[in-house]
Image (tube, rainbow, N blue to C red):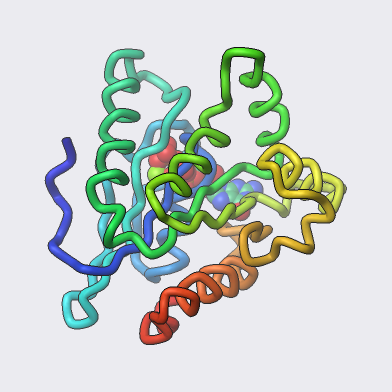
Length: 205
Ligand SMILES: Nc1nc2c(ncn2[C@@H]2O[C@H](COP(=O)(O)OP(=O)(O)OP(=O)(O)O)[C@@H](O)[C@H]2O)c(=O)[nH]1
Ligand SMILES: [Mg+2]
């Protein structure tokens, strides 16, 4: 189990498959350097960015799914640890940002969906809701997507949110973390913070 978490009463977590851009997004949020990479599996322990004076922490969690050079057993362990982390700290977690690669998400979800299987991303979205954490879907790498509305509608549908996606701007935020274009996500996170009565944390988003 991860044991690096600072003891803070409020937290925002970034979760999602490997290589979708969670750490790049973390860097955007904090303005501090975080290891990112060309290959999946760069982050294998949580990166916490901590404001002790505000009693607040943002956590970039390791990714799940394929990781280059990481054995299956270790990947399963990381996934279990991520789920346990979320479960344990759910009472403190105000928003769960589920990061997707806008270019690949629909194909990956469809490939892993079947009569008896559920894609990780969909499962995680439901899990966040089940433990009482409002999820926000950050659809990243939009700079590489041509038909933006078409892709976002397709994603919305996979998560059971009826298209058009624009009805769901407090839950679906198209961004390009690498280009520093994350305003829709800041807005969506603020909506959730406001619902939790935590306008004091607006300064971070
Ligand atoms: N085109 C494009 N590439 C991006 C964007 N955001 C991140 N990337 C690239 O995607 C790759 C993976 O980024 P990371 O931030 O390391 O991804 P991660 O989700 O933290 O990956 P793990 O730590 O392996 O789970 C890097 O090469 C980034 O430069 C984006 O908005 N657009
Ligand atoms: Mg990372």
